[in-house]
Image (cartoon, rainbow, N blue to C red; front, side, top):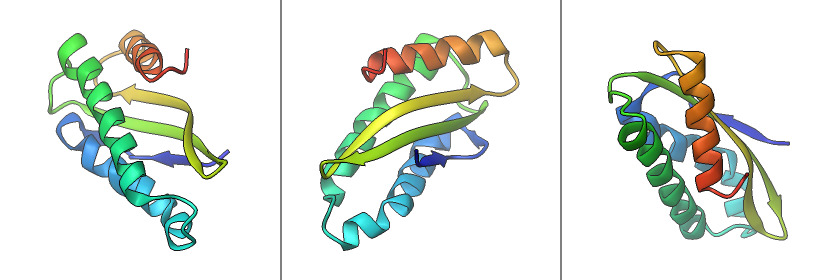
Length: 111
C-alpha cells in the first residue's frame, strides 16, 4: 500500500507539506489523467481542515509543536482512497499521539 509522510514538521506547516507530498506521489496519475488534481486537492483541503481541528482546536497542540503525518492510500477505480493515517506528535506524549490519531481517523471515516 502506498504511503506518504510529511516528515517532522511544525503544526503550522503540516498542511502545505502534506499537500506537496501527496501531489508528488500522485504526479504520474495526473499525467495519465487517471486522477483529477482539483478533486484530489479538495480531498486534501478537507483532510487538512480535519487534522487541524483535532490537533489545534480539540487537543490544543501548539502550532510550534512538531508532528509527522503518515498517510496510507490506494487509487481504486480512478479514486484516491485514504486507507489509514497516523499523526505522530513530538515533544508531547504517546497518549496524545494515539488519541489525536484515533480522533482524526474517526473524523475522516476510517473507524
